[in-house]
Image (cartoon, rainbow, N blue to C red; front, side, top):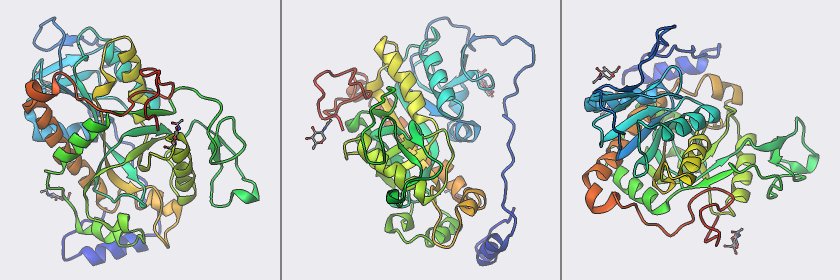
Length: 389
Ligand SMILES: *[C@@H]1O[C@H](CO)[C@@H](O)[C@H](O)[C@H]1NC(C)=O
Ligand SMILES: *[C@@H]1O[C@H](CO)[C@@H](O)[C@H](O)[C@H]1NC(C)=O
Ligand SMILES: *[C@@H]1O[C@H](CO)[C@@H](O)[C@H](O)[C@H]1NC(C)=O
């Protein structure tokens, strides 16, 4: 790895650009060992039997996202709760107190995040009916709308890989990749096969409150990230890290390239009736929202308290002159934005968490009122269909 100081910045960048071999990031082992055939002891570390009632449940999707919290908030280790049905390598939920802030690792991709969230909501060790559940994860960024290091808050999470996909497209589909909505004959049509998890819409007023709080944070930036941003022609991609309200796209596939990005953008517009714009792309939000949604239907959680916070660690497509291949393998994490994405997630997220805890009695305990539709694509929570995107 090339190390940077201010003085060797230019040389370091040249080294990155002239490096012929793509950099492959090694798969790292989980820091929490799976304890062989030693039986796991489920329950609370303080021995109490009553359910934990978090004011905020923070969701990390893997260990780097999880580790930013105890680093700044060591009290998150005050109470540990080992829960059945979570990720085998992350069975422990960490909490500041039984009615404080908790942190759970969902695992990555849609299946893990959905099943972990659902198992958590059905555990008798927790009562999540008043908990604000906030994902705090890193994501790819759409350079048309955001920049690396920025922290985004979404109203929608749409799942982009519930689609048809062709290996080669008809000539008049120029500018789009092979994805198009299920049950249709081409891009920019509303799907006719609906599976139910295509779009989730969360509390817009809560999202705005969270973004407003996050704006208090002084976000970090690095010279290397700044330089890479200048390679993009889109004004949004060239901006310094900021806090934005824009939407998220979930896919299991870790894709890279403008062709797929633009096709996903068309899909996003169709799925949200033109009201959603995806600026972040990740692998979990449709999943944990599906779990939280199902738990809400049976009164074990409150979907109206979901917050989607995603910071941008890389761009979902290459800048001019860089191939999709190199964008994926050489530039995803290698240009300094991974570190600031993690830091900014904590800096912004801490403001949101503190606001909820500090103003619990006055504002948050009773729930945060909003006017927008909240829920799934079937309008399960609102048969009158107010304002659904
Ligand atoms: C909770 O888990 C963390 C991390 O494994 C550990 O450092 C801490 O001591 C545990 N706290 C309690 C109260 O057991
Ligand atoms: C900003 O990020 C850089 C690179 O990760 C780090 O060295 C520095 O300590 C960070 N500054 C703050 C204030 O977090
Ligand atoms: C889509 O938006 C248009 C314009 O705001 C509105 O008239 C229409 O009812 C919306 N459709 C749905 C399905 O929400």
